[in-house]
Image (cartoon, rainbow, N blue to C red):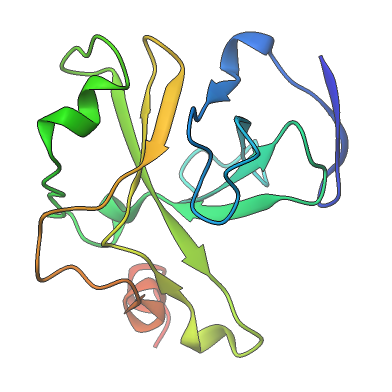
Length: 152
């Protein structure tokens, strides 16, 4: 299936990899269908991905695999929230966190309080609020990323 995107032009996507967010995302409730796009598909080690709407070419969110920066990240969510994602197995959930990258890149942050959770078995996703009191909405991680990539 060919979709139009503002950031990547027209891209061919596998219809089996379209994820349905029944309630949309906060502030974007009208958009229900998304795909995950890797900016550089040759680099599977990249921590960044895009959550691209298939319904609106202009709507895409930068996400990251936060476990590569915070290996002990453990979002606690309400079981009732997970129910809406359908049947879950041990390895069917993927978790990403939305990143904000301002003009001053060193001020980029990731939302640890509200991860995006996707069930690969049902292709359903949602953004959930964790019960963890110590996870901030804005976690600044630029220095950690620099250290991880060998920068000083």
